[in-house]
Image 1 (tube, rainbow, N blue to C red):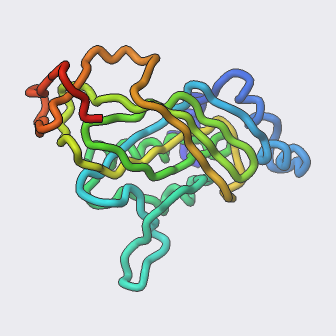
Image 2: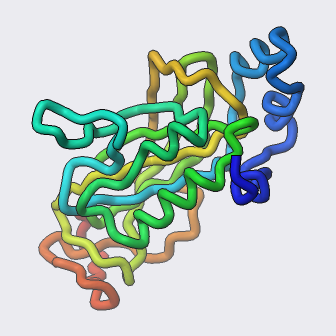
Length: 219
């Protein structure tokens, strides 16, 4: 594991949850079993939310190809090692800044004590997701979220759906198997500090020229 990954350990460590990951090394089979089958909840998770407005994929697997010789798309996955992370890269259409964030996020994870959970999602262009918590148990991850409008200075197009990827850094080293996943959410968010209300349902928003109209809601 590179010094960079180890140096950034702890960015998602979270009180008692960290005890799931820090019990022992791999030389103790019993402790390894407990560590990798732990259950827990993070009420303030470290999460990356890149978008692809021009395609239906966020993450690709460079170690496998389809019948046309193209890298396959990554769906839900638990990334449990730096070697596996090195196989993954952003799909065409993901902004350069987000491509760099994805790479940095994967590289900064200490896979001896942390796991990255990747989950694809879809969202309207002018909306964003606020993650309220993430929970895990053996072979399953669930998260809670709410939806709200993006800030007025964010470019978007109303009534248009875009592909969203969610990258959670879980403060526990999990087994790579995942057989179940789920999410629950509401709209609008109730606990954030959003001060803007509504984007005009007919507007294409290029950035700072966001149209605000208290008379309707495009969500």
